[in-house]
Image (cartoon, rainbow, N blue to C red; front, side, top):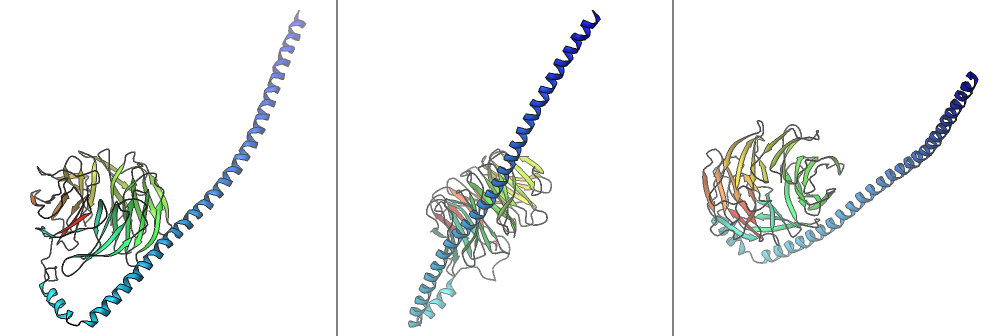
Length: 420
């Protein structure tokens, strides 16, 4: 009886051992198969990485070819302009009587001179009204006291110079964008002009020779805004809900952050560490350090944030929102200092741009009825409403002259006005 039990136990153990050996063999076979698969996938990954590098180099080469083509076009434009200038000089030399007329014109000019009053001045009337771009003029920007740039739905950035008669003359056209130009920024030190575009790209031009320097492609939707963080770094925000930091020298994206909401405007801090602020569709104002993936602070505003403008001392931020108000925010304390509004003021669109005067004495914004509203920054008093002889359509962008004298405004129907 005892021996039968032992035999049964031995048989049971032998069955268990056989099952264990079978399981071991199955696991070993599976391990061999997975090892082979891992090796195959590793080789595929290495090949894909090599292909990626090849494609990146091809993209860079194509971007360079693209830039060279546009630069060739710029060279041809410059050659035509130089030829035209030489012809005009030759004609002028034939008629010396023009000298007296020019002298009289210069004496009668009202253009600001070195004897002008220093500080910010409230504009009083329209000095000129001109067509700048074909269609909406999404952004306008002073590059110096007498040169400004305009960008719009015609895919062009146009450079203008104000002459002694206070009249704009188009000097150059910068090309390269395949869709509307939405935002402009200028770095005085590097002489580079930055343009964000609805073609999902950001472009850099040299304003001295009008050459397209590089194109930053990587966003998956319209780029609503792009600004300089420094001479070597650019930050851009898009409708794809991604903020990208770009290295100008390396011509590549060095970081992407994901705030989770459409970016409507973005502005960089010009001094100190590389920090920037973004305004969003979800009514939030986010403050960032470029070294981090998460915002260092978030503020809730009363409406979608359409525009941001930073004071020259990097302390105060002007913020325009869709609830028809503007706010001044102390970026050191993350606190709202003043709020500006007016009974007739209506924010014109999700891309309506506001502006601070250079000395931060005044702030201004354009309304949907074509009027320009100017407030006193400290008292919040509405100082002036500019409209007579100006715009007939909603205003999209403003730019205050660096001298503090004069304000540019641009609207949805080609028109740019200079108020002084």
